[in-house]
Length: 196
Image (cartoon, rainbow, N blue to C red):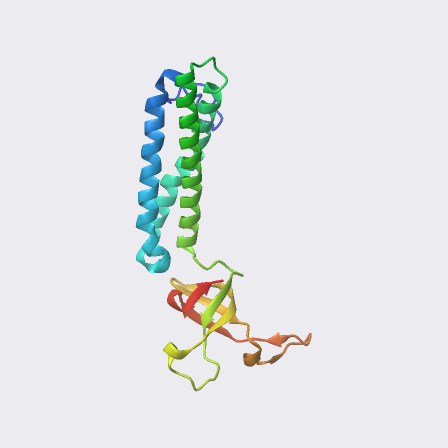
């Protein structure tokens, strides 16, 4: 799908559309991209559990590459839509159907990867309900024995650390002006936080 000089949907020029005779090659390209995306997702999986493993530059570069792939997805969709209404042989129609299915898998894979990258950048977005390790008494200093309590993310305080409101009636610190309970706010690293 080389680009011509016209005005394409993305502003970079009108694509030179591939003929249906190229369906095998186009399907192979889509399946190769899908495999590469799956490999990338597997590579990112350990970093999901330990957000500090990837630096901001690496995350930014991965986002750029897969953002461009997502932005070009309309090309892959439209080529299938151009092939489907053509007067195709049974064999060509089956191959076009295979291409469309592979393209749909690629779309889903790119969206999954984009979501994984967003979670990598901040696995605990503001206002996320979480479970957080927190002591029930001030004199409990053994962090390994702290229970998992309900919390709500206030925000990322530093790389790899989040401020969490611990919502447990046993920890109410008083009442605000409106008579609502005031809960403690703690700062925790990723290993002491779980998404609910």
